[in-house]
Amino acid sequence: MTPAHYSASYWYWGYNLPSNAPSGSWRFEVVFQGQTFTHEFQVQAPVGIHKYKVTNNKYSVYPNPSNGLINVAGDIPVKKIELLNLLGEVVFAEDVVNMPSINFSKKNAKSKGVYFLAIYSEDNSTEIHKIILE
Image (cartoon, rainbow, N blue to C red; front, side, top):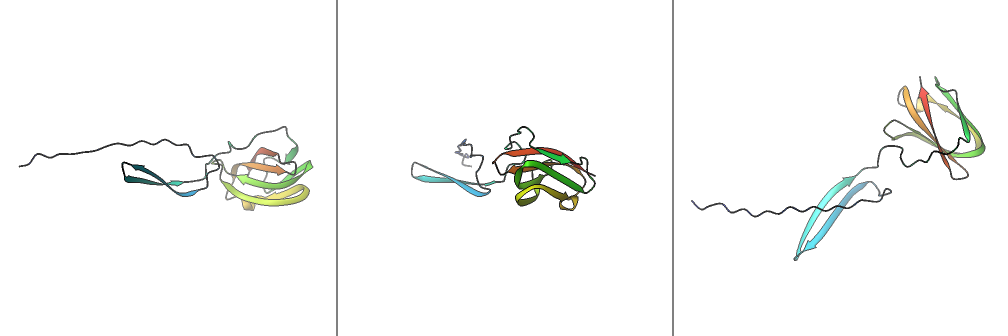
C-alpha cells in the first residue's frame, strides 16, 4: 500500500467593499505563480438605517401612532419619502415634488408595527421618524 500524500494551502483575502457597492454577483481573482484563483460571492444591499443622519426636526409627523393616515408637514418641501421596516428594507417609496405635506396610508405597509419614515427634503437633508402603524 502506497502512503497517502496530501498537499493543501489556505488563502485568506480581506477587502472591505465600499458602502455603496452595488448588489449582485462579484468575482475576486488573483494570479499567483501563473495560476488564476477565483472566488465568486454575492453582495446584498445592507440592512439597517445607519446611512441616515438625524438632523434637527424640520417636519412634523402626525398622528403617531396612526391607524391609517400619516401627515408630514414642514416649511421645506419634501422631495421623497421612504418607509423602512425594522431591518432597514424599503417597503414603500414615493417621489413627492414641491409639496410641503403628504398623506400616507398604511395600506402601503405590509402589516401593523413599527417603521421608520425617511423624509428627503429639497435642501438635500434627510430626516428619520419612528412611526407606529396600528
